[in-house]
Amino acid sequence: MTRRRIVVTGLVQGVWFRESTRQAAERHGVAGWARNRPDGSVEIVVEGAEPAVDALVRYCSTGPRNARVEEIRVTPEEPEGLVGFVVRR
Image (tube, rainbow, N blue to C red; front, side, top):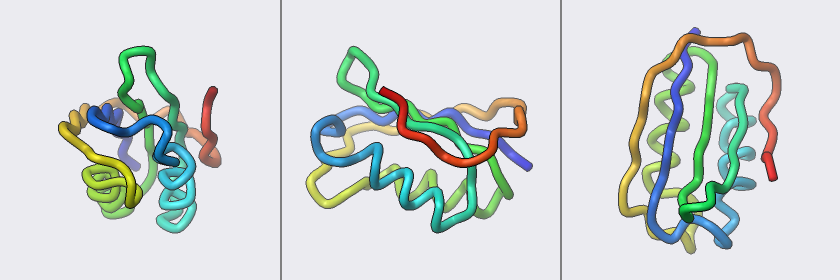
């Protein structure tokens, strides 16, 4: 089990980034959450098997079709045992 905090900057709000990340997380079988931040970035926390988490990190480096990712910062953290994936408001 591994956990990563991902912060994505660029044109990432208002382009369905959080919802598409939720869908990708469900496809990969990982848990966590995604939220918009006041600075215009999107923050994602994801936990699961390392290959699945790595796949979600790769997804976040491009995001959905209308997103324009400028930077992605990935920080490892200690897993908390999250269940499911939610989009936070």
